[in-house]
Length: 80
Image (cartoon, rainbow, N blue to C red; front, side, top):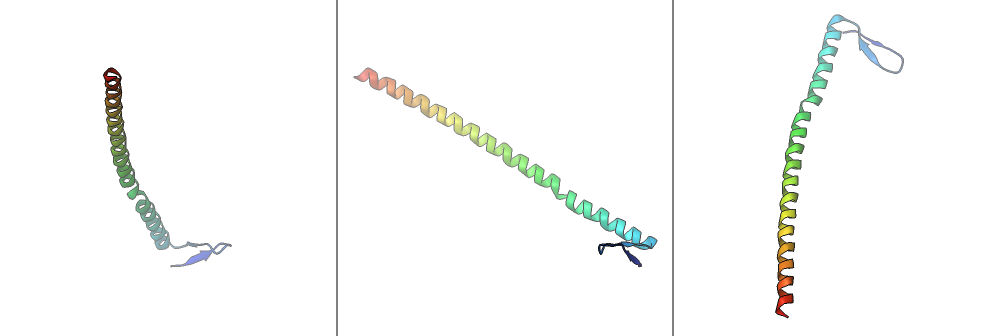
């Protein structure tokens, strides 16, 4: 393969075989970077949904505890 230099140390292929290999390398690089993105997004979505579910359950528990405390406090007033 023959490469030409263009000023700042950059080189590019000049022959058809070199151009085909450069195209394959470019496509493989894009695919290599793009493949893990849906996996990361899906895992984030699952984690986010689970976190929201936990927060909702915690709020429900807190509401129940607050209600019980209010009932106990009202009963204490009647006992006096």
